Amino acid sequence: MSSALPTLTLPQMLREQARTQPDAIAIRQKDFGIWHPLRWADYHRRASHFGLGLRALGLPAGGHLGILSENRVEWVLAQMGAGLVGAVTVGVYPTSPSSEIAYVVGHADIEVMVCEDQEQTDKVIEALDRLPRLLRIVVIETKGLRSLDPALRERVSTFEEVERAGAAAAAQGGEAVIDAALQAQTLSDIGLMIYTSGSTGKPKGAMISWRNIRGVVPGIVDRLGLDGSTTHLSYLPLCHVAEQMLSTFVPLYLGSQVNFGESIRTVQEDLREVAPTMFLGVPRIWEKLHAAISIKMQEAGALQRALYRRALAAAMPLAEKPRERWTAGERLRFALAYWTVLRALQNFIGLRRVRVALTGAAPIPPEVVRYFRALGVPLVEVYGLTESSGMITGHRGEAVRIGTVGPPTLGTSHRVGADGELLVQGEMVFEGYYRNPEATAASIRDGWLHTGDVVREDDGQLRIVDRLKDIMITAGGKNLTPSEIENAMKGSPFIKECIVVADGRRFVGALVQVDYETVGKWAEAERIPFTHFRSLVEQPRVRELIGAEIERGNGQLAQVSQVRRFHLLTKELDHDDGEVTATMKVRRASIYQSYASEIEALYAGGS
Image (cartoon, rainbow, N blue to C red):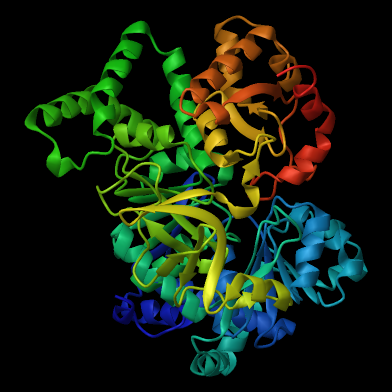
């Protein structure tokens, strides 16, 4: 399959798509409620102009361009513009505070920084004295720029100004610069640097070459059944490899369409309008969609709730059964459930046309996968890393075993180490960490990428047990996998986060963060008074509710893994407080330190 792809880099593929289907729509962006199309010819033209504008600003071939923005068309125009002139793109999480931005921008040797708006620009300006290599700032939305200090304003350009400068250069023969850059570009060149989330330390810059990108795409396309007609809603951060693979890697090789919504806050509305054929959601997105349906059903009448329960009861046994093996009776029962209830729910979440739905980047409770498959949404769990340039395992079509991440994809070789760690090999394995040879040597050994994930393999299906470093041993010597316990609890729509405490302890304890929206709706229906997060979780009946949900989760676990005591957090875990990463991964060490007294209280007294 890999040989079926052109032996071209991603920027070379942009030029090829513009040549072969110039009038086809490559991107749509929603602004003020209106979807604006961008054809492949215009995508290539605007990216070329921006790339030439970057050259005019002083960004050399091999130079580093940073992007600090939510997903939007300018993100990919900047990325591909940089690629067209031989520069490297580095994404920075827009939710990051100034201190984290300063670290990434400084460590990555970024010379030109694209910022979405005044808020993001201010974060960079705050750290300018620590960023001697940063030459220029380019701002997409210019409102508020007039308030900049005049001396600083000389270092700031608008996105439009850079494009105009590039267009002027193109009119003076600048296209030859791009042609020369693309002629010199090889698959071995670094195209992207993607920084890890930094859940256990400082973020590391993974260098992704054009060969890595071309190496991962065939497996994604083959396993998910994608083609040029695929449509995708882009909303997860483009500085993460998961969104890169579906917003740039795959579309540029297949010529498929990407849609950028108004903002990450309008995802559900945008889903209903786009009705994409492919959708990627991290576990928290699926948990929120599950919670949204739960809230809707709480507000529904008695008849609607009864129909909903009956439809789920009919569909749930079919969640893992391939449709070609359904009996006539099962087809009839599902059809009745679909036309009376499930079709409306699919429309409500915007996924009625989806041909494949993905979850990855973190563990997901199996019952959440089972729930959506029962609704008729073909949700599959996939697995990949920044260091593998994206997805390297996943289920195919109807062949799903819930709780596993499927077999490895086309082009991925794998083996399981003596300690259960998954090792992988293939063209998709990254080139190493920028300015960190020690971490590179620890990650790639004897040609094999050490993923750091413990797996079990059953009949070719891989099951992720936990991170190797997260395995816990109780005081009684029992090995526990915290993610299994946490997932059992997070299957509840009322529990947003669960952090297990068990290492060296007599029994399993947990810190629990409720889902404020779902629990709040429940409390309103039960006429329980509250005014904010803390007042809600301090209500005795809320604690009873969560206690019952934890007992439900315990019913899925072996006795040694069951949560015996829990503490309800009185605030949401916060990125700014160092409790979660920009991708909302829990920083266990930080949380254990911040909540040391609450943890000790769990273990005070008898067992």
